[in-house]
Amino acid sequence: MLNFERTLGGARIYVRDTVPPGDRVNSGDYDRYSGPLHWETDYKNSGPYARIADPGTHRLAVPPLRPGATYYLGVWSQTDTTFALSLTGEAPVVSLAGRLAFYGGLATGVLPPGAVAHYLIEAPADATRLKLYGTNAASVRYYLEQGTLATPGDRAHWSSSWANPQVNLALSPAGWPWRPGHAYYVAATNTGDTEQPFVLRVDGHNAATEDEDADGLPDAWEVAHFGSTWQYSGLSDPDADGVSNLDEFRNGTNPRVADLPMLEQSAALADGTFRFLFVGPLNGRYRAEYRTNLHLGAWQTLVTFTNVGGATWITDTNTAASGQRYYRAVPVRP
Ligand SMILES: [Ca+2]
Ligand SMILES: [Ca+2]
Ligand SMILES: [Ca+2]
Image 1 (tube, protein in one colour):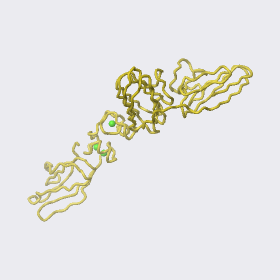
Image 2 (spheres, rainbow, N blue to C red):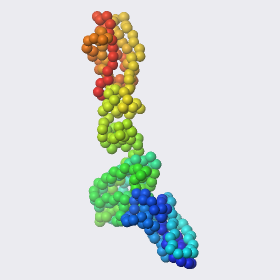
Image 3 (tube, rainbow, N blue to C red):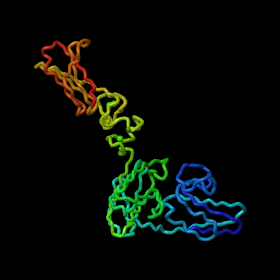
């Protein structure tokens, strides 16, 4: 409750969240007003909030106030003004049907006609994407608000009016209203005249799990190495080192720098068998080759193999007839 007393002059009070009123900065944040920036229509983060011109007691309620948010009161006057402001708090009246985990939260229920169920989803600070999947008739509608309780039937940051709705929202610190580290409220309501079951699933992601192109590579890893997600897939091998992007990711290696194997041990056995230990990137694909003259002749394939354990014994059982053999391992497209 805001008590506003004015004993001299004229003044108005403006309420803002996050950005103090009157900073005259176009922050690009969501704003329901348009037109030039000035004291009254300065960009802010949510609302709209009351513009209080009359002395007395005014109730600032949720919604549009957002639980846990910081608020600024700006007092504007054209002339010398004497005024007093005081605030008294009320216990919040937020009746939640439940909190839904950002990673894999699930709500199920049956809504009687006209019923509303409110849920809270708290996005972690490192969240990158929020997806919601509803399983329900079109008469069950969802209203999603960032920061404040949703009011069914009213304008919301996102709402549905169709059966089995889905929404896929990228979260970023620069995006309003879809930001990481914020609270989201979903209201599920039944607009029909018969009771309706519903299932609402929350599928949140962070940089480690977001894979919108479904190639098995975290999109953040793809963007960090290739600048985009569409250029290569998990099976691609752009550095031609025989290690697929998927295995480069799993191995923690650089998909743009060829990872080189080594031949570490060798042994010539009494039966004429020669073997050597190939050590290289886990799950790289290679072709072991030989020839009898280091500088002349075609390389012959000895064996093509996947380096499953990170080390592979290569055995040549046919060395007795030839005086000498040279070996090499060549990366093969995964
Ligand atoms: Ca991907
Ligand atoms: Ca590679
Ligand atoms: Ca590599």
